[in-house]
Length: 459
Ligand SMILES: *Cc1c(COP(=O)(O)O)cnc(C)c1O
Image 1: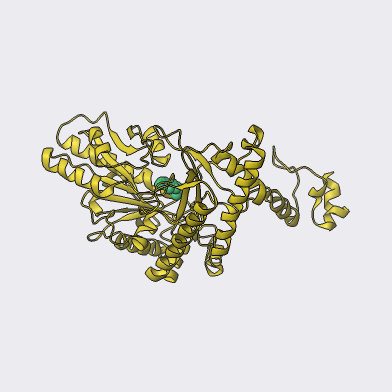
Image 2: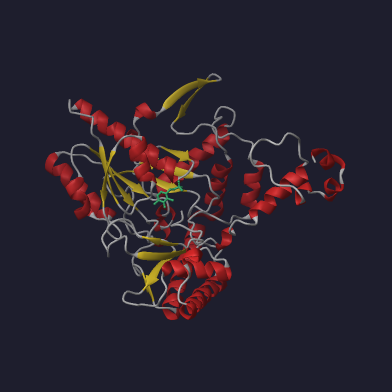
């Protein structure tokens, strides 16, 4: 077969995989011409969902052609080679300074480019662990039982951090009607072994924020009462690019005294393609010095604070492109448009179905979290709707259950990003209504159908 490829008609046609299986176990013994290799990948991917119809993801699915060009032209630039690419390193620092200023850092600060919020959170939480140990060692106290406090509304990365880096998670369960946490939830869990508290600005479940002001006040009160100086880390993966533009007067960032570090995903509402996150400290001293590695490389000293090493520069440059291109005005315009379309979708959904919009009127990410109103027995549920609307129109609308103590609550959630324009929002609402009508007639999706629902909670 392989010899036929070289000279046969399918070779001349441009794709011998028309009649061959895809290589999937071992490296193929022979070379394949570039066109056929490209085509088989493109053909495989038609089975994936269409990213623009992915209502589950927070991550950017569209960038301007100019940004795409910057990305395409810089794929060969290894970000870690600071000595060879000093301007790329400088651009990273510019981005960090811009974010520190956006988050109201009081003075000079430090931070890092990361692969996403997950790496940023690992690094930020590690710094809290190291700082806690320094404080305990200075006091001659035990350092064997670190814990960290957060709510059941956090992203899975926080539990991952605890397992990977051996810290006891103290997870505040949610309540059937309360999907974020506040100071009263946190207080019973904080003690002298608490390395820090994590609060979320814009949860993945409903897009709302924990009571960060309240938690900050609690930690300040504890500091004055018994001298425990517990830092607050804000997980602003999604909210960090939303709150400054939609709710500029709402305090959640370095304006609050105990907020010592913040992470944000550049690839979510920073509007860059996947592969970029940021960690910003309040002050230089909030980064544990021990975690910074100094290397002498080609005669220059380079400081690194990352879990990875070699990685692309393209998304850092794309982030800087967005910062320049959009500025404060552009981000406000874009995020404002998403918010306005999200409110429009919420209104339409209330008109077309027996839906309850979750936390409407509260500060929230540009999304609609909704569920079938309580007390309705319709013969179908949220998971059926997700299946039906995917079957009828290809929308990937996630259905999921909430975390512990609220796990009987089923939820649907649609992210409203910039590519979901007003006409598409109107169509989406009609499509959800149509799916409900189908379900009302046929009485729910079958078990087999429900198992085909592709989307989980979605990130
Ligand atoms: C998406 C998300 C994360 C993880 O971020 P990545 O950038 O995907 O690594 C963490 N926390 C929250 C609240 C998120 O929404």
